[in-house]
Image 1 (spheres, one colour):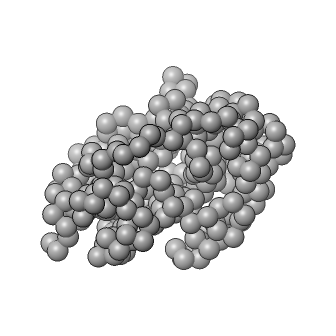
Image 2 (cartoon, rainbow, N blue to C red):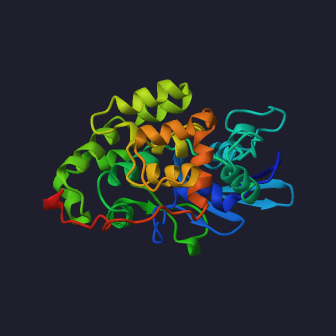
Image 3 (cartoon, rainbow, N blue to C red):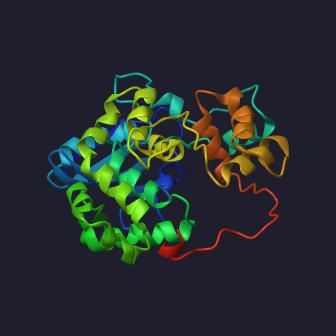
Amino acid sequence: MPTDSWPLDGPLDLFRTLRPLVRGQGDRTVRLARDRAWLPFRTEDGPATIALHVQGSRLVAETWGPGADRLLARAPTMVGVPLRGAGDSEAGTESRAQPWPDAHPVVRQLARRFPGVRIARTEAVLDVLVPAILEQKVTGSEARRAWQGLVRRYGEPAPGPAELGLRLPPAAATLAALPYHAYHPFGVEQRRAETVRRVAARAAWLEGSIELSTSEAHARLRSISGVGPWTAAEVAVRALGDVDAVSVGDFHLPNLVAWALAREPRGDDARMLELLEPYRGRRAIVMRLLELSGLRPPRYGPRLSPRGIEGI
């Protein structure tokens, strides 16, 4: 069980930083407590599980499995902590919420309220990309049910303490080999199933996005049919540590931004980007703070209802 620790360069809210990785209450690919987190991954050396917790002013990590040493080396940038002696990096200092002096009062207040919120960088592209594809044009409950079902059926027990009940996400080769109709029991129609199969077949190439610049990584993701700007941004802000990613095309976010920053009950993508422009370079942090704020625009109509796959 390799272990290590690193000095924190500022507050770290481990729970809220990693919360976007959780796909519903029954997601067994991650487990979060207030100051602890357990996450399983597939690495080049084999599967591994990492446990993270904050101890005073240090981040402490412990790992299990064949890929334990490789995963341990990724721990600091996973939660935005610079490596010892490396100085600040894009996935480090810039991933922290900052109370910008000239920011909107709501943003300043939220930055003070949530000082330890950072942007994660898991470097596990496929593990984020697949559930993002499952979320396309369906309700959150439908997407969570599909992801959790795939994990239960095609995932594997993760290394580490058995009592955690963690499972590895399905392997790329497994997802690519499944015929599209094998996804139907999980409520996934042919269009999304084929997109999952396409990205799984090119998993190694997509995982290489972590070595590219932000713009190049977005371009690589979007080169796959079925992966648009929204899906690419969802991956970038979780797997790549992109502190500026904005999920254009989201059903809820434009209204949230318009309401929080302009008291306008409705907004579109253009208005959202206009209001976020003063924060270019750190827009993902602002979006995360707004999502944590509890602010909600007025509702004027019914919510999107779940549908059978024949209606998607």
